[in-house]
Amino acid sequence: FSKFDRDGSGTIDATELKATLQALGQNPTEEEVFLMIAEVDDDNSGEIEFAEFLRVIENQKAKEAALGDETDTVEAFTALGGNPDKSGEISTLKLRATIQEFGLTIDIEQLIRETDKDGSGKIDYEEFKAMMT
Image 1 (cartoon, rainbow, N blue to C red):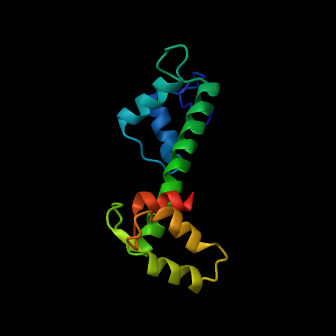
Image 2: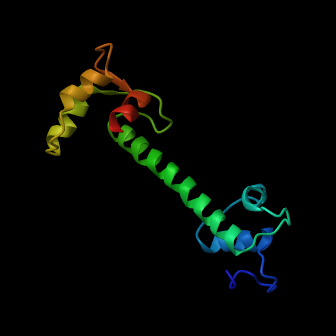
């Protein structure tokens, strides 16, 4: 914290927070930085103290984790024939073949029955996502 509190004030302003997040591999916009401060700035000073800074980092990690979970699902959907924008469908035949190819021991037939309610042999993104959770 003190490394990024360049003026030694005991608080981090928007400029210092942006530099901190960039050092952590993130690239927030000015608006995102101000929103982050507003989320945790209990005393409405426009700057964040150490405890508030920790809450910003926790919030950022939670947001990244939520995005990461969805990213893995989209990548799996795309690998099976769906589109990266979550459109399209995957074939239950391809899904079965992939499960067998990798030697996975899940009951794919039950999952397909539960997911492909209309028996079309196609699974869209939302159905695939439900199957994966």
